[in-house]
Image 1: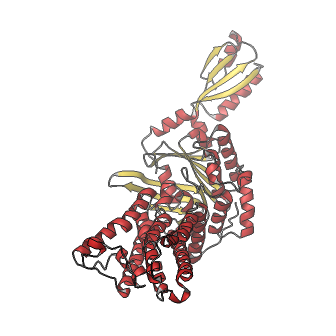
Image 2 (image 1 turned 90 degrees about the vertical axis):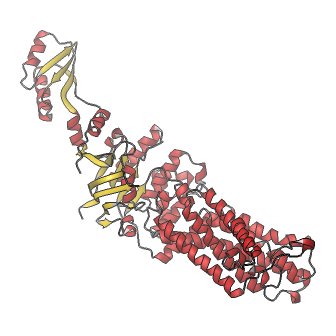
Length: 265
Length: 314
């Protein structure tokens, strides 16, 4: 009889193992390196037209971070579930003594960690730039709040990408839909509700405006005649915005997990 | 716990009407090498996916070492190694990275993982490819890597779904040799194929599946007997003439004789003991037998005859 060299692992260690394997995959696919490069280079663009104050400078840089967060979520989590089924690696991965929930939890956490790394790098570069250009004394005091809200939006965006990935069969469809949802459909929803003078408090991309508004900077580019706004503007409140982002993250991950563990070839 | 693999009235229905499996019951003993044969779409892969926890049965139960796969998949899958269909690979990873991960999944120690990676890659003839990205591998190499993953943790039970699909003749021979080696090591091997000739080379017994139902189960020995249709072809050193032919016809066990030059086709009752007795008599008659071979229907003819039988034996 063959010797069975197997011992038991608990769910937590399975998740940790899956997380490490996913990080290795992101590294080997060079996605992480590409996103890291973008996180270091993109904050340098506001240097082209240097604003008068440190807050405006930080605000103009952070106007673009939500785009990078969406890209990161789509790249790291967009194919996290459907990619295994589409490429048939599920046939290697699943007939093993691990809970599927642990495998998928590891995948979500790995995508989240990578996105956190990208966001953190952006803030490090931005902080160094701001300090160098405007002096450390002029550093926006609420930069840390902006950083935390960026991390919270990352949690929600990766959750949305994870949910979409668990629905779809093809990675490319899932990735494109993540972009569409977070960069077009939701912002259009925010725009329509704003035009109707109703606060879109429940849309997570609206909550993401906190990333810049907590600094006291504008969250959007000027609109209307002479660059001024012609419609009523809404600004998310910190408490509601955080609650919405947390709710999106929890609901999307829970729903995505429920679908993923039941998914069959 | 007599059976390594056992299923009871396993059924899987897709939609409202399509029955991929319809009450399949299997009983595979420890250490057996069993072929699971049927045409494409018969339900072989569906059975294997249920046994490996990839899909859930609509009804019935699948047990591995007595553990219900649907109820306790982690416990059941611990003792299984599986190669299912044509699995994908992470083509940006090396065999070392992939196998290290799966070794950890099975809770193996680092030193054991490293040793087993070397052993399994040697066994599947990929020792020089341990640190090369799988994206550059041929189909045969990918299949062998998947087999290496399946046996990394020295499972008690090995489930192979069409393991030679897409392989060249050399690759097919290598896989056969590996299966013989697994049998020698005491593994239970459950081998699915749409080719009877493929499983006949390595299996102890065969389960025939068609349209989601088991249509026949038999040992290879039994199949061999059924294929024997009561004719032996005998080649003699010299052409046979009247007196020799009369001597042969006089043998009690022989029903009739067809002679052409130095070759005779002897019709008898098909029993192995009768065949032995006929040979002994021919030798005792000093007829200078050069070769003596039982004729049989071909494996594929036998397969077709089994598959055309719709009775089912679940």
